[in-house]
Amino acid sequence: MSEARTGTPAGTTVSAEQAEQQRRGLMLVLSSPSGAGKSTIARLLLEKEDNLELSISVTSRPRRSSEVDGVHYEFLDAKRFEQMRDHGELLEWAEVHGNYYATPRAPVENAIENGRDILFDIDIQGTFQLYEKMRSDVVSIFILPPSIAEMKSRLHRRAEDTEEVIAKRMKTAVEEMSHWGEYDYVVVNDDLERAFENVRSILRAERLKQFRSPRIGPLIQGMVDDLQKELAEE
Image (tube, rainbow, N blue to C red; front, side, top):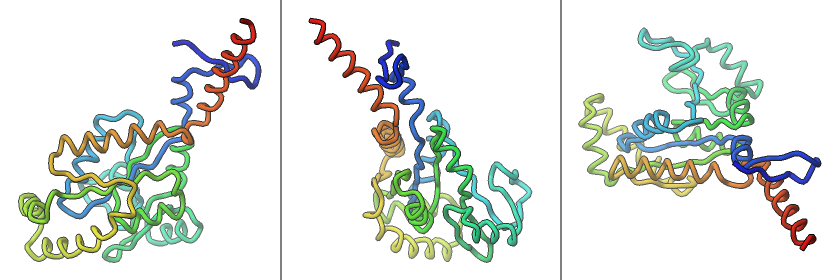
């Protein structure tokens, strides 16, 4: 691949590939009401997209026998969690059924500063907390089912919840769906393959935004310098 000079400092070169590799990473947030297929899309992204890793949350709840510390969650006690919260070490957090869940700040900041993208499978409250802390790094996508009837049908097909729990999830969906306009993108999951490709296209386009690639400017300036030199010599 040919290379273009950066212009400054003299003699330094940067290729288009290097400019892309040295970009700042992003935080890809997926949210949805239950039954919209968000978790399936997230799994496919992690399987098929390079340079994308799942954000590992910390929690104060006890580890289940099927869970691996550092893979499913990082498990810690409530006292340590509260220390992290009070010292600004969390990007977002929530208390659910008496247990804490959160995203630690340090590993996320380290990842995006080194050009790695982080995937978040979180609810609207968590998304808005990320907005408050690092809005320019967040790319948010709200996943919708094609209809309420289909969403309810998917919840029944999963066979994971009682009728009472399903009714509660449907009620929660009303509140969640009212915030769709506060997301950067909305994708309707009426066909899983198409919805996945739409989300994947958003990720790829966002990776190319110029403000995420600090070396694009020097790359272009190098081209301009070369062109001006050629014109001056004619």
